[in-house]
Image (cartoon, rainbow, N blue to C red; front, side):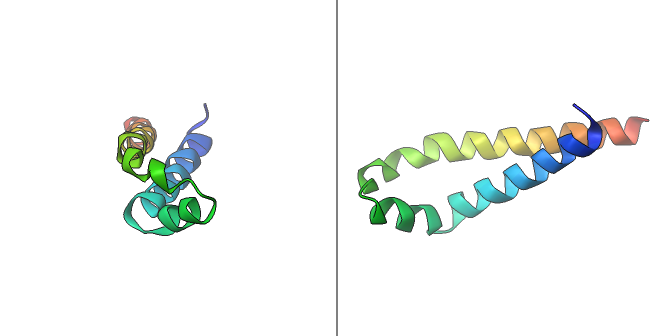
Length: 67
């Protein structure tokens, strides 16, 4: 994956995951479509996803700095 694309994936993925994780946007949307019973499981998915995207961004920045 090219550095620019990897940085874009890391930034966009981190922002979207953080918005869904730390704001009630996802809770409101899931409640509106009738899936509010799954809200207890969101932390098991969103927090590791946030760590993965931040890791992708960190790896991209590390590669950029080492060149």
